[in-house]
Structures are given as C-alpha cells and as structure tokens.
Image (cartoon, rainbow, N blue to C red; front, side):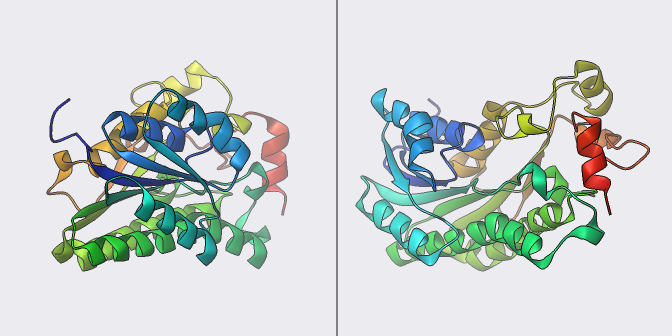
Length: 281
C-alpha cells in the first residue's frame, strides 16, 4: 500500500458505521489501510450484523453502541477512542440520513420535523467533530475530519427542505471548523454523495438504468465503495494540503441537474403514490 494512504498506528472514529452502507464500507477500508477503527452506531444489532464480521476477519475494529446526538453518546465514543490501540487521528461523520416520511412540501414541515433532521444530520456531525478535534488538539497531534453532506445540500432539494438545509449546514460548518483548526494541523473536509446504491436509498429509489443514463453524466448510480474511496483519500495523507473542501461524489449528476420532473419531484422516487404523498399540502 502507498505509504501516504496508510493509516497504520492511527485511531479513526466512524460515526454511523452500522448501516451496511457507506459507514460500514468506510470502516472496512480504513481498517484495511491499517487503522484501528472505532465503529459507532446507535444499534447494537446493526453493529453485530454489519461490523462484527469485519473484526472476525482480523480487521482492527472496535464496536461502540452509542447515540452520537447526545452528550453521553459522544463521551462514550471518546472513552473508546482513548482506550483503542494507536493515536487518535481521524473522524468520519456518516451518521444521519432521512426516512421516507420526511419528504414533504416546505409548507408542511413542522418544527419537530425540522429539529429531528437537524439533530440527526447536523448536530451529530458538529458535536462529534468538536469532541474529537478537542481530543486531538489536547494530544498535540495532527488529524483529519471528514463528514458526509449530500448533493441535496449543494443544490435545491424540493420536498426535502429540512434535510437539504441540514446537509448544506454541514458544508458551512466544515469550512468554518477548517479555518479554525488549520493552525493545529487538523484538516476538516466533507464529501457530498449523489445517488448511491445503499439499503437506505433503496427504500425510495428503484432500479431504472434508462433514467440513470438520462440524469447522471456517468450513466449510473454510485456504490458505497466509491463514496468510501473519496472519504479515505480525504482522511489520508494523500490529501495533506486540502482542508475546508466539500467534494461532490455524484458521477456528474450535478453537471446535468435534470433529475426533476415537471412537478419538481425527483425522477429517482420510485412510485407515483409516494410522489402524491409528499406533494400533499
């Protein structure tokens, strides 16, 4: 392995590691690059299903069941990171997402809807980053923080305004934290995935190669490995002079940005009944 990609001797926290998608894939690839990975999920069952097999294969992975949206959860993660073998170096914020029920017109979004999506996506990212950055700084070491935003945070997100705004706020927080922490040797970056083939996205995105060809410059949806590859690049010394950036990993979806139909709903939504439900005022 290229030495600048190696994470030997480094501890990397992956928040949102248990879903079987991007977070789990980042966990595997970071461990394969030599890191001790502290894999965090709210669900012990998800960790047992998706992450424990990585440890069984000999990868250096420590599972932690904790809620990254709470101070207690963050403290639990930091304790595990301090106890892990190696030097705390990295954090990947994957925790977040949005259930299909969160799609709706902006006129129908309640305060509870708004706060739930901001807690799940923005607060988990910020307070976990804050805690890990403070710990790295206390140890006097360099570090790298990478967060998962979304293409929805880089452009319009019709019928998903709270999610898109929370993901846009991750971009803003990334830039500001990068400016504050640069002198400490801590880099802060993000990736903004386009439509990616994961179990979570399968709940509302169907298989339609003709649509993918029309909407995405590269003609297909991405894979968790392709998202994780960009994250690993930003985590590693290969990107040692990059900070405050958000990289779109979307196969060129943003280059066309024609994925909206005449009613401004996404072409990637898989059934008309779902479209009708989210348009309802």
